[in-house]
Amino acid sequence: MAEHRIAAIAMMASAAASYAFVTPLVKIAALHHVPIRLLTVYQYPLALTLFLIVVLFCGPWHPLPGRDWRLLIGIGAASATTSLAYYQSLRHLPASLAIILLFQFAWMLPVIAWIAGASAPTPRQWSSIAAIVLGTIIAAGLGIRQFSWMGLGLGLTAASGYALTLFWQSQTSAATSPWQRALISTAVAAAIVTVVYRPWIAPSTPFPPGLTLALGCAAGVFALALPLVLVYYSAFALGSVLTAILASLELPIAVFLSVVWLGEPVHWVQWLGVILILAAIVWGAASTARQTPTKPL
Image 1 (cartoon, rainbow, N blue to C red):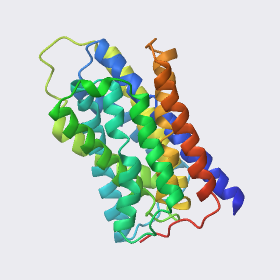
Image 2 (image 1 turned 90 degrees about the vertical axis):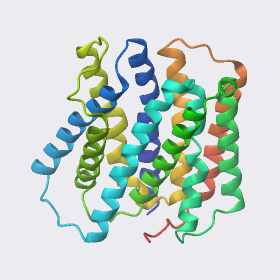
Image 3 (image 1 turned 180 degrees about the vertical axis):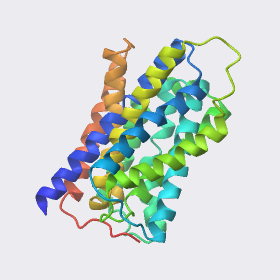
Image 4 (image 1 turned 60 degrees about the horizontal axis):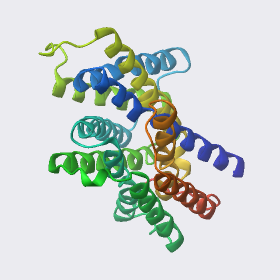
């Protein structure tokens, strides 16, 4: 059991690392005048194709109970909400402030689980979550001075969608293939995003179609294909608190990528925030790694 627990922790941390690539990709897209709505839509075809190939050739299709269908539809809707809101928030806010708002999922997720009937977080777990939020604010630097009510609403909406996505993923049946679950929830999300953004309507301004497609495929790998399967494999074994803590690894990795990939300057105070987040992750993970995971509700 301990080995499975450690493997689940490693998979959740890897999912967070994968999702950390999304913010630099969106920033690169904006610098090259790639329409955000097309980038959001184009991330789905590659991920759906990968999931479908694995489902068709690596195992039979298992019938799902009605409860799992409802959960997967909810996951798809919440995931679509996260993508729609977060990518648009980057148009209204500095990336650092948008990340601050997205990372409010760190306290939303345990609260959602608590309201739904799970055990309340322990004082040590709450202190870890509080340290993560504080470290996120410090790591974001001075972006909070550049305020937008629209950006605020979009950022908090993205955080809520992300928290619900992680919570419902932890409630799905472990007996069903993670690839099958990923295929269904991603198909739901793709349908919602396609209806909202209507990619068949051409943008009014010129854009690089080849780069748009390439960045969309990259976003599909790092925002959908890798993290979805890893989370489906691991979330049910971790519980909501440890899931929230490990998912917070995304921020320090995103800051590191912004430095080495985009050449953005990062003040030493921001690195202090990153160190605080890493310390909080170790503190929280150490207190929960041996606990019994939250049972599906």
